[in-house]
Length: 180
Image (tube, rainbow, N blue to C red; front, side):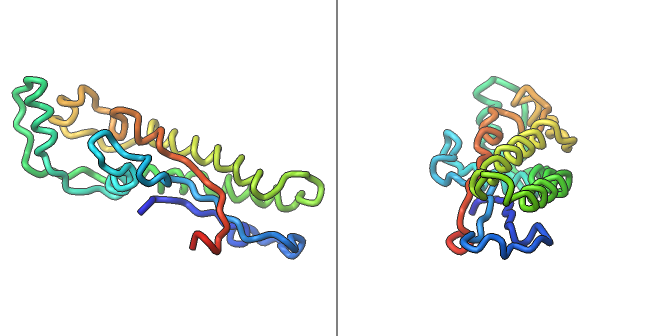
């Protein structure tokens, strides 16, 4: 299951949409949408990892212990440990939803004066939301890594290890009826 935000024309504006006689209800989906192509080298789904990181989880320390041993570090990783929630998706939404909704309302109020299609607009907005989510991953004020995680990864920057999570944030424009 992918973690997404969905913005619908009808849900985000109070404007009369009857001017769009032939407009199908479009949605913008932003998140981890690529399925099998979005995996870590060990085969873990980026979408599933993102959901775990968003809400927090109990981690199995086995793989981390193997990494510590491979690096010849004298660290005893707990068999299980709690990874705190680091809600980069929800934080982005809370910080930027008014901006996104204002852009949609502005576009819709000038629709008859522009040549931009709803797909064009959603693609432009998708680029912006993608950037904002990536910024949230990089710059969020997250709980620090556990001391043993920081020692093994040689970093205390949560959510940033290989950069793969950030790079897998993407978007698509879809018909709401086919994506519901």
